[in-house]
Amino acid sequence: MKLNVNPMIDDPDGFYKELIDSQRNCNDEEQRLMNAKLILILANHIGDRGVLSEAIALASLR
Image (cartoon, rainbow, N blue to C red):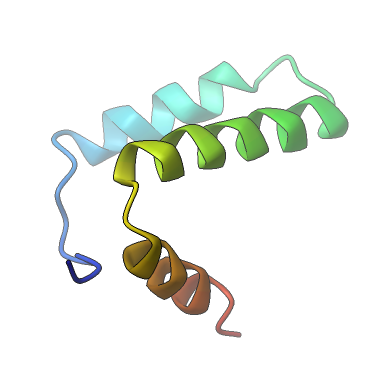
């Protein structure tokens, strides 16, 4: 499987608002912990190590 970088989220603005709202009352440490948990949950859902490696490489570009 290859990493899909095409837009796939229905209602991306709604998703972004939900994500931001879920962290609105969190301090910085709580936000980092929630983001780490979310990353691991979604990585487990994806399950394909090659795709995950591609995503890591893409995200680490500066």
